[in-house]
Amino acid sequence: MAPGAPVSAAGLRLKGVFKTYDTAGGPLKALAPVDLKIAPGEFVTLVGESGCGKSTLLRLLAGLEKPTGGEMELDGKILSGTDLSRGMVFQEPRLFPWMTTEQNVAFGCASGTAAEEAAQTVRRHLELVGLSGFEKAYPYQLSGGMQQRAAIARALVARPRVLLLDEPFGALDALTRVRMQQEILRIWRAEKMTMLLVTHDIDEALSLGDRVLVMGPRPGAIRQTLPVKLSRPRDRNGAAFAKLRQKIQAEFF
Amino acid sequence: MAPGKKGPIFRPGWTLPLLIPVLLLGFWQTACDRSWFESSYLPSPRAIAGSFSSMLLSGELWGHLKVSLTRVLRGFALGAGAGTLLGFSMGLFPRLEKALSLLTGLLRPIPTIAWVPALILWMGIGESSKVTVIAVGSFWPVLLSALQGVRSVHPHYLEVARVLKKNRWTLLTRVILPSALPSLFTGYRVGMGIAWASVVGAELIAASSGIGYLIMYAREVSQPDVMLVGVAAIGLTGLFIDWLLLRAERKLLAWHRGLP
Image 1 (cartoon, rainbow over the protein chains, first blue to last red):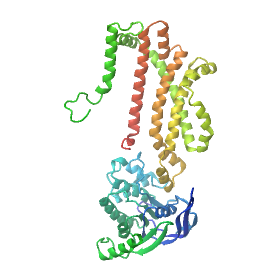
Image 2 (spheres, each protein chain N blue to C red; image 1 turned 90 degrees about the horizontal axis):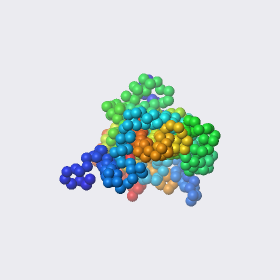
Image 3 (cartoon, helix red, strand yellow; image 1 turned 90 degrees about the vertical axis):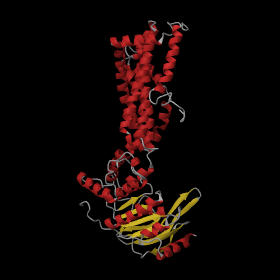
């Protein structure tokens, strides 16, 4: 595939997916059966407090963990294990400290990609995330925000059809976080892929998602689904935004 | 030095590490000048330095050093190579580690020198028994550090490789190996130190050349200054080798500096 060619976004479908952990104190229900449909190209956000199972749901979708039961489909194809159709951005940048920014991003390229094509893809994605000029820098020489940009680029060069983001901006300072939220929207528009972002920040969920899923704990389950019809960029101080925020807050407080 | 004090007494760098050795040498020299010790028991630093430089100039010292160094390099290459391979294998395959755990636990506490008589019996008095002693000595620390290096690869990094669907070879060469490198280098430094100590031990027992032989021979002919020249040469060479390894580590592991 030529670098820069659009990848068709994929839809996700979950049927009765649940997860139970065996612990010393007996089985622990981490996730109650979830039914969920995400349309191709949709940006869905998942908001909930820590320990509500939202990260578990994302890790199941990534293939990092196996569901105890239920089925997950990507465009009608049943999923098991990891593959390049689903990219993942973790809360920590998880860059390899022994590689430069460029090498870290190139690590995302599918095995067997021709060197020249890989170099071109890497260059394009470093530009997309605003890291041109930092190709030769090591992770410790980058700020937290820049490290996370590199991690996003690494996930993107594999050309996933769905990008899963696990509290990607949770460790960043408030100002950088808002800037990164604007960036991820820009990337979503440019790459036209399906995105599912997990967060504990209600405003973040509301500013980004076409739809906000509200999760509650013990066992983790989706308690509310909230379509957000406001056009982007969204005014966080507007009345409509505040009303949606109130609706979500009512679930928690 | 505490901040705020006026005038630095010690310049950073070489002054502080040199201070105590120089004071000790000064005390030693004074003690010899005032005949606190018998010079046939403890020659003065000046006398030792004189023998050192004349043996260096005549090529005698270098001849012995070269023999010992060659043994060390051959033994270390063998021992560290085997330790790296087996350590990595044990780290990658927990069943192998378990299968070998009792054996390694039993063999590891045996001091290297304890093997010398047995190795001479099996391999004769030639080079191979000495090289093997060194190989055994450097094998253990390298084995342990390689194993520890593989074990301590952060699970976060392994998940990244899983999500990106990397094959085992890529995982090994681009994630596990570089991640284990700092630990491995520590093992190499310790192993080299033990290798250098082992060669002298082996030469003290049975050899007709090398620094250990030089020391033993000097004792037999009652030349305490030559004896101590040998001892000093061991220390200086060991320091130099460690400095070389540290430099190599800094160069190869530049990325590791900025880490906690």
